[in-house]
Image (tube, rainbow, N blue to C red; front, side, top):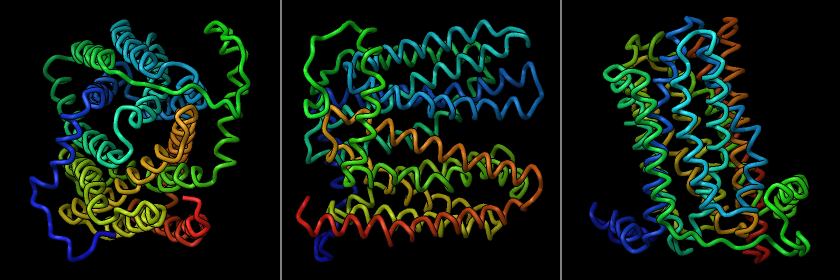
Amino acid sequence: MVDARTPKKSFRQAFTPFVELIKEYPSFRRLWIAQAISNFGDWFGLLALYALVQRYSDSEFLLGLVIIVKMLSLALFSPIAGYLTDRFNRRILMIICDGGRALSLLLMLLVQQESLLWLAYALTGFQMMLSAIFEPAKTASIPNVAPPERLVDANIISTATWSIIFTSGMAIGGFATEWIGVEGVFILDAFTYLVSAWFIYRAVIPQEVRCSNYVKGQKKPSFWEDIRQNIGTDIVLGIRYLRDNHQILRPAVAKGTSTIFLGGLVYMLVLVSDSILQMGSIGLGLLYAARGIGTGIGPIIARQYYTDERQWVVVMGASIALSGAMYLVVGLTQVWWMMFVFVLLAHAASGANWVTSTVLLQKRSEDNFRGRVFSTEWLLFTLGNSLSVVVASVLLEWQIVALQTLISLYAVGLMAAGLLWLATVANWERNWVQKGLT
């Protein structure tokens, strides 16, 4: 904890470490720029994809199927992605992923009639499979381009960038879809991935070989022979690595624990805008802007007041519980500005959970297992998110529970998850620290 007598930093001083990190470490800067551009591409083209589906079908199920395909593709490919990001050069993999995502968007131009709508889903699934490789490869690479003492700053920059891009990308994509059309957006979106690949190409990203304790030395096989011979073994070894290292497993399940309820709450914000606030896309834009802003400022606040890494697992549980408490207010009010404020606060807490868990994983994981660690974390996150959304949508579709009641129930569940974390996981971490294993 920061001493209460420590003088408060000015606004400029608070941002100085981030600016210095970007200036002093060119490979981190290039990786960060690539992340910003590729994240923009992720959100920029989403509304164009929705518009493409709506052009040839008025089915709400087919529209929702886009989200299901995206989440399941990420989840199902995550174990393989973890193996790839530890076995092969992450920099090259990220370049290939950006190129593949650009190609998938250009192939979307072939969808010119209803009978070809299946192709849009297939290409979306392919794009998300590549994202399942890119994201853990990017996150696992941050400790290789930034010094250990600057990892908190590096991940705050990464998270804040995501929040800014999330807040602005969909809005810009919506206007672009209206002005230049679906096809024009797909072409521009493909270009963003190519620019991202260029910045990664110019970065120097060192990487350690796999841990000799788990993999016996052998003659290096060809690419496809390597995959055929080792993929199953390496995935199992990654699972064992987490199982045998509880200090890594604990932060690895933090995001998945929160999203079991938070995923459904974020989904229900779409419905709140129409049925409760009756503000349509304007209300949705405000609520999603609150989500993005909160995600950005939460880690910055956590950095100022929680500098002792030994307390971070406790911070994760407290953040999960606080996020639930904030959403409970959202479920009890119908005033738009109160919803805006408390959604912002909820995701500020969620953002603190995100960064603290990410940094601990980066610091505690060996480089040659880091890809599998982050892909497993991503798997838990996407599965939890998908389950949360499916349950919420079924309960609402069958009119089992009213919308605001369900928000309140999910919020209480999120609070309970946070309190359970504090009573169990945080206690295990405390015992581990007391044994001098840090």
